[in-house]
Image (cartoon, rainbow, N blue to C red):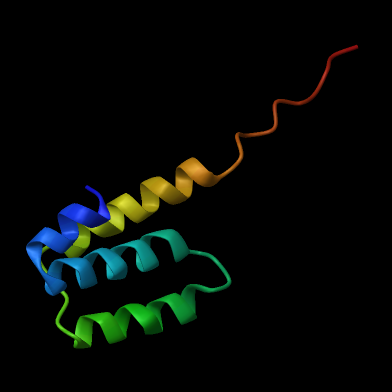
Amino acid sequence: MGCASALAGGPADLLAEVVGIFEGTSEGEPDEPLARSAARLCRMAGADTDAIPAWIEEGRRRSANARPPPFSGGLSP
């Protein structure tokens, strides 16, 4: 799903996307309290609560993909 598809569903869908991406990408990060506050405002503005869980999973997926791969241990002698 992209931003264009969220817009097609209306502002509640777009707000749900923002909530999910904020919450999914900020879990365990230093900015998590700020992201949760922003997400709360989007919920109060009328985000589609049924769509939020899927967007949280998308945020988690994006966050995992953005992390560097695990260190391989370097070169062996």
